Image 1 (cartoon, rainbow, N blue to C red):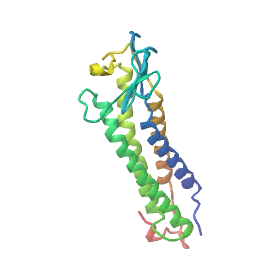
Image 2: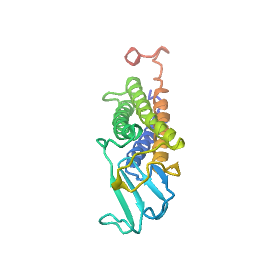
Image 3: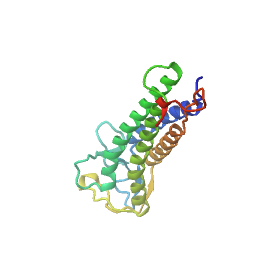
Image 4: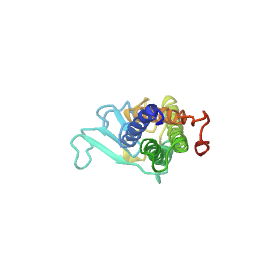
Length: 213
């Protein structure tokens, strides 16, 4: 008898959406809204501080190929970056790689259940659940660290070429960190749903030994 796996199928869809959102969030420039008092260079008064670059609208400075925007790139090797941003650059992609492994395990599990071939069943769902949960936790740690820094208005010692003050008037969470946090929460939920899978009992009411965890 084929076991009911509707919840696990929904969990796979959820984890795929979560993984896609997580990847997309790393490309969003605005992780922090950096509000500045001096608008002589930052015309809008707000700079977007992301994971890999900072940008702001300006009528004074314009990057090549852009009309009214100035951007500067950032990397893991930059000494001025605070540890929480470096953690996002390193740990969050690692978490996404783990989440991809969780999705692969879930696909294998569902294939084993529906087709009856390949590596599937309770053990595969267990792997999928733990990998998705680990992926979520790897992302949530750096994200919480960044949110704490924003709420505490922690400074960033930008080099002169960034044209940004080390201490803003205030900071607020941007679209990137909100999307990344939502993605991590969804990944955690999908992991829990995978872990909730229970194989059907055998003919005698006992779970087959091959499915014992």
